[in-house]
Image (cartoon, rainbow, N blue to C red):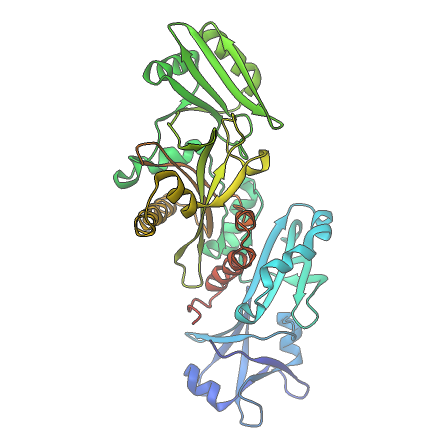
Length: 448
């Protein structure tokens, strides 16, 4: 574990940072050099003092520096040297709501990220889009006090890195890219069609994708149904299984439409592709839609099954496969969303049960799946999207072939850990989100 320090206000000196000789040796910090101190986005030229009169786990900062850089003195910090800058931190931002009123109502729940504050350290500020003051680079929000374990409202300086959990329009994305660059992750939220277009560029991933086309005109629907007897119709921006339809050919002309709404399964029949196209025209009202090959998914007791893999980057910036959760749909439903009445199970248990595999066979297959989803994440990032956590939905057909269904990057929920009754995993996923933010804030070492 890295050395951490308590900040002691220096009531006598001005513009001064004082460190212990051991700290100077450990960090290779000579006194005969011009130094700058950085906290978050702000930096200040300082006078450096080295003194054995303070403890090894302390740094003294003159009050004017504390006030100018707006450094909270509670909690513990790390000190890192980069060229002629000394970075004190980490200073992390959580952008979790658009409205300040929403942040006021939900900020207490953000403590879930900080159950292991000692390994994260530094200062953590939660804020909303409304709370951003672009004119003076300050934010109105809440700062976590690790001593009281409370969130304290106030106006604070910009953090060094930002973890975002909400959607941003292009104007805000450009602003954050300009100000934070690569220290801001989960910035762009891609849709199903973009994902398909990006991943089909890579030969080692595209073979795991079901055939997909953009639905623009009746001929697209007709051509896809000529190619496959069953297809799915999905909005490119849809989530949680909403507005997903399954179309099945019945003989030469008739078409069966299946969908679920409010936990109830519905079936309709159409006499032609053009009648069905008119139905979709009214249902989607000009929104972008894809047509996708329907897979012969595994099922159990009449319940379709697919899987969610939770991927999270750690403090070293490496992808970690946190869990594989099997999602069982309601009996007779075409979707597997848990919030729509589905259930969950540990993915490895499902593989063993459905395919009658030995523990060694499950382990080997699970390893292959993990390698595939990590490769998928790397391909997504090669397309210019900076991700820190992903929820990758995969399916397995009756021939034991693995398919990539969807990649979710709008704050994919860690609640899947709770669905399989693993509360420690829930907290670990959230902890790793902040450890990756810590990496981006200038503290990239992996904790041991």
